[in-house]
Length: 206
Image 1 (tube, rainbow, N blue to C red):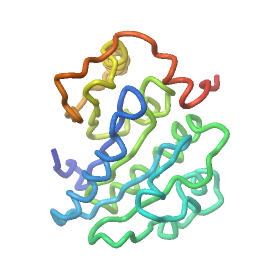
Image 2: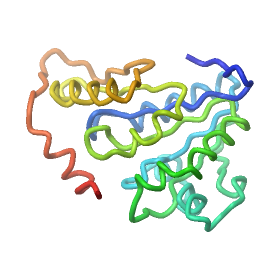
Image 3: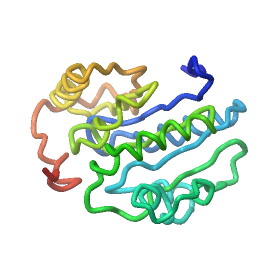
Image 4: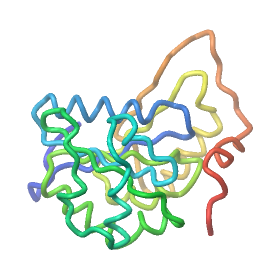
């Protein structure tokens, strides 16, 4: 999966899932530690600006973080880069929860930030909200080099997966790989009832 781009910059890798509770946060955390252990200079960015958890996972402060940079409160990226006690691994927390997450993530400033981060790290991993909940992941997918879709056996709904893949296809985006968590043949997925996705994150703003 890992390779440098033709311009010598690192790889931007996004991890998301169709819905909540499918293991994307655990997956991306483990990926980040794995890359770091392989000697790759790795940055983990909490871009779930609605329900951020990376600061809790790694026992860090939520702010200052990504939103502080995007809203002009902090311009020094070094001050947002947190040492979490794992060699080669740095964490950028989400910052405070903003009123319009999708607008921040889709901004020119975010696009330029991704380019800058790739020039300073071998691997930059972005943890995004579920695809079926809000548009946050879609607004920056075009800036990514790799995309990993996380599914959970017995939890991921077949219809939600089909809709997610359809949206990705419309956007001209294909997944690099798929992670399937907690496979259990005794459990089956449901095909309907998507409301809990939007209930989990709230209504998407226009």
